[in-house]
Image 1 (cartoon, one colour):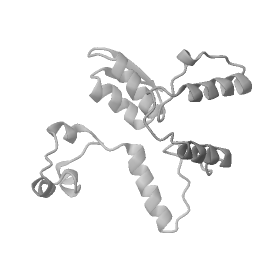
Image 2 (cartoon, rainbow, N blue to C red):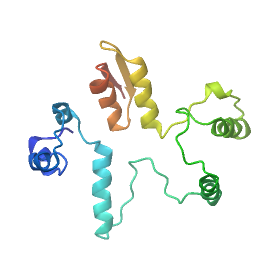
Image 3 (tube, rainbow, N blue to C red):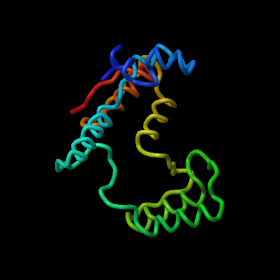
Length: 166
């Protein structure tokens, strides 16, 4: 889904009026970048929930349960210990050790720290992989169904040809 000129003018950040008022002038390439279909659907689901309609959202990949108490406690402890700065991009040594321990304990899989990468989510990791590996003329095969922005990651950002595999 791409922005239309009407959609751009409706967005406060993209409107010509905002450009005059704020001095911000978006690059023309932003017109070709669409809003993720999943996020658009999520916004509709949120609106329907506010209206009191029963909605089950299966789009954004977020759990339907609260963060476990032990994870909340660990986050609070880390904040109080001053661990609030940027970390190495692929995960701290402690995080990688915890991930390796989980896979060993629960799945019988053993990995070294240099075989583990952590990120903000699958979308970020896949984007980084596309950025690092795709060049013009390459072909990307996407197993459908897939997150709608993966297609845009292959097509628009890396200029690779994209082929769906149902």
